[in-house]
Image (cartoon, rainbow, N blue to C red; front, side, top):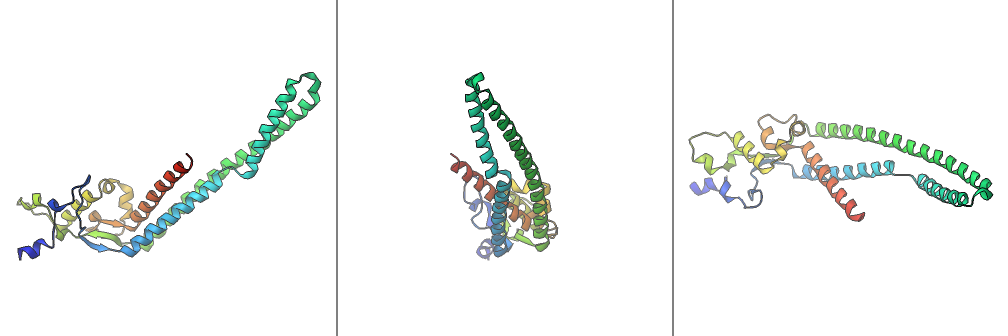
Length: 230
């Protein structure tokens, strides 16, 4: 009977000793693997779409790049004519007027790009809010993964006379397993909104999975951009 009981529990000394020791088996009571995979894929695709849209709207247009090159050429030609002295006064005046006109055109383009960037930021903010609400409503009250406190034994706790509830065991295990993610405050609490109160301390909600996918893929994209720009 003793062997049968110990086979259903996880002890802390059986953890794989790594930088942050984690048990080889997570004693979960709920796990929606299909939904987790779906949310991870959706978070990756959504983050990619947002970044492509932002890049497309924040980058200079082909017209702006051409005008910028044309302005540099005009300035160079004007400097050459100006170096010739009074004999090239007419040509110099024409080039200087062309430089002023091109500068005004380029300035308008820059102002338009600044306004476009502001509109893009507002739209992305609204999309993020709407997407978070949709994910929350679709998985309202559903934990993607929850820990079973009855399957956890800590030798330090077991050696004391103190009685620890399954909820407290699960909460302690969860905080240690995902430290420091479980201490991120309001965002983490929002992601668990609607989930049964007894499970909140030892589970992960759909929003947290979605945010994790976005954050991870975002870091991957940043690393890829830095590597390609070397």
